[in-house]
Amino acid sequence: MKDDRFTGNFTQQEPLPEAAIEAAVRVMRSGRLHRYNTAPGELAETALLEQEFAAYMGSAYALAVASGGYALATALRAVGVEPGEPVLTNAFTLAPVPGAIASVGAVPVFVGVTEGLVIDLDDLAAKAKGARVLLLSHMRGHIADMDRLMAIAEAAGLIVIEDCAHTMGARWNGVLSGRHGLIGAYSTQTYKHLNSGEGGLLVTDDAEVAAKMVMLSGSYMLYDRHLAGPGREAFEAVKYTTPNVSGRMDNLRAAVLRPQLADLDAQCGRWNERYRAVEAGLAAVPGLTLIARPEAEDYVMSSFQFLLMDWSAAAVRDVVARAGARGVELKWFGAAEPLGFTSRYDSWRYAPSAPMARTDRVLAGLLDLRLPLTFSLEDCATIARIIREEVGAVFQAGA
Ligand SMILES: *Cc1c(COP(=O)(O)O)cnc(C)c1O
Image 1 (cartoon, rainbow, N blue to C red):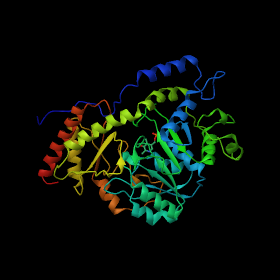
Image 2: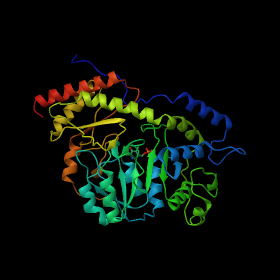
Image 3: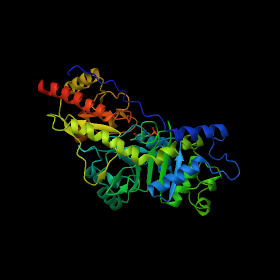
């Protein structure tokens, strides 16, 4: 058994559901792909998606846009972030998050990560007074104690924007991720929980913020065609002063997303089965630390993380190489140079940062793998076994 290989593809998602394919063909046959290009009496797919997403999230308003990163930048613009302004964000997140801050000329200020892979709330409390906005990233689906986080934010007068690229459908204490802060932002890029290739969604209960985001997305004066936007009066106040930073979603992408949204909860359940299969297979492996999941968190995990805490870089590299030779692709966040998507706060040299010892210790041991729904539960057990064997071999040799 020792030399068996896993042959699955870590980046292969499932095909889109037939209903999505049929809806896409209908839109293509119509030729009306632009969201404001509708026949008399027709409701655009994009407007319907927004209405359905607002209903799912229990939000007053929703807006569909061109990407998750665009959604984040739009949220920052809507709350008036200005050039040169410091914006708090996670030291451990994906590059489009500090990138969104930089795109509006603001300055990312990094807050550390804990061994639970969430934002360090003590570090946040210490840095909260120096900023007006927190762009909070629920990176890789790990949700911080949102009750404590919101208390810190309220005490410091911080506006919270949630990056929920990995937490669409997840909850903290029963509240959907993205519904704690002023704005929730989501991605529908292929590797997230809904797949339209590229795409983003925004939710809020604030009419002024919603009106600004609709104008920013490029609504021209056609905002009354939205089914999940605020009333006309909200636009009167902002329509001449909010720039059009064109980034709309189109009807083709909205059409493929609507049937997927209807399936979201079921898909989340399937992801979690796979996550738990890997977690069970990696229980009690000497030298390997699993990520503890708080009781209050209802996670949705389309990827898996574990820590090799305080291992030498050479030993971690050895594990990555040995697992890779057996077909298991592990991404390491501790390498000196970013590879693929493994960049971290000190990789983003356009933003100033000082070393963070606790964060560096976590990232130095952090390994990550994707769990697409094309993997069976048996595949997940095989992946866990290969990791267990290779971690065990290197650990015994003296990590
Ligand atoms: C993917 C991702 C984004 C950005 O989404 P895009 O749709 O790819 O622009 C933002 N934050 C996190 C944590 C992500 O994983």
